[in-house]
Amino acid sequence: MNSEKKGRAKFTSAELATLRKLIIQKCEASPSQQKSIRSKMRTKGFYITDFVDDITSVEEFDQLVDSGKIICIDDQYVPSNEAIVTSSSKNQISLKKSVEKGNIKEGLAAVVGDKPRVLILGTLPGDESLNRQEYYAKAGNRFWKIIYGLYGKEEIPAEYEERIAFLKDNNIAIWDVLSGAVRDGSLDSNIEQGTPNDIPDFLKKYPTVEVIAFNGKKAEKIFNEYFPQLLNPNKWKMLTLLSSSGANNQFSLDQMKKDWGRILK
Image 1 (cartoon, rainbow, N blue to C red):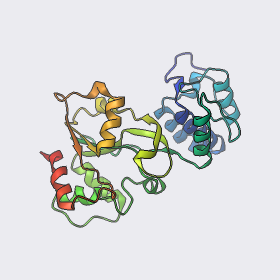
Image 2 (cartoon, rainbow, N blue to C red):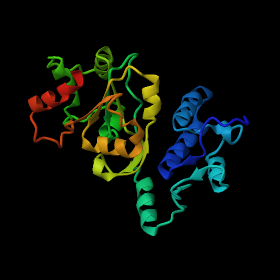
Image 3 (cartoon, rainbow, N blue to C red):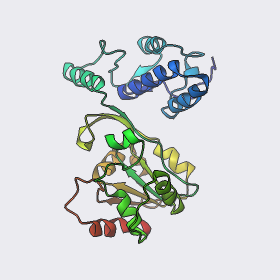
């Protein structure tokens, strides 16, 4: 075991639930598949070698938590469908139901090219996007219509890879404020126990970013809660855009494009 720690030892219950799921996947995966799974763990700040040489069963992971080597900072952890530790019986029932219903949602990786100028942040992808592993996949969401419309294009490619390439070609990156959360369904109002993405590290890695734009007020609100140190108008132009969600239908597409056009100015 490497004596020099690379990650962290304290996690929220939502993070622990995600890590536990990854441990199960790792134990069932082939050696070649395990590499990508370990990489996902590291993006969450978890390095197995910080604690043991290797973890070969989910029970070993649970033991690390039970022993206090891995700490749950909100005093909630679900080692199985039967066992749960929590400081509130109300939270216990809610969290247990969320686990049983599969309501722990894990977001998508950032879409980014070499030199992004604009970073557009949502909250957390909806269930349709997570199922398809594509940003803004739900038919009613107008994100892609808005983005292509800003460049005078009405036709949107059917292939997701082409849309991603279009963003990168125009120096636009997209990501979310949260890397995961407990959420029943797709509504932002149902988000609980959110875990933030490492946006400070992203901005260090991509110093070409000039504009941070929020896809809706909820994304801005969560960002402000987690990253007050980044609220620097002298460093980035920060914009709160009309949400592209299909539920935000009181605005026409032309109104949306006019509002979002601020990211290009």
